[in-house]
Length: 116
Image (tube, rainbow, N blue to C red):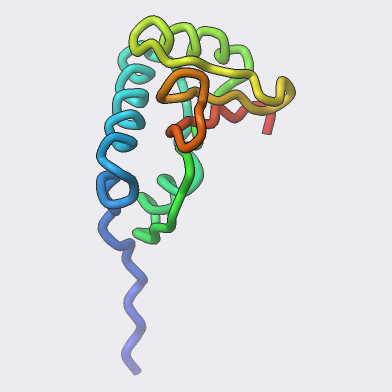
């Protein structure tokens, strides 16, 4: 009796295929800034799901899991290098980085998630 082949992961979906080009640029730039500054983070949410499984879905943001102790440094680096404003939305678990100004309606943003 033939054995079933192990399922293989689909090719990862491109960031450009999931969001508007300006949003993809924002997310990509943020990831490069944090990586180059050697600030630790873990990619989560829709983009992690798409990378690991090839399954994509609509999303409103980029989810980065960080340590609470790194929050201030991360937001300082993003402000200094890109001019992005951050808010500590829920001090016990969530901050946001806004692509434009102070997070106007429809503006792209990144969730900085900690203590989860």
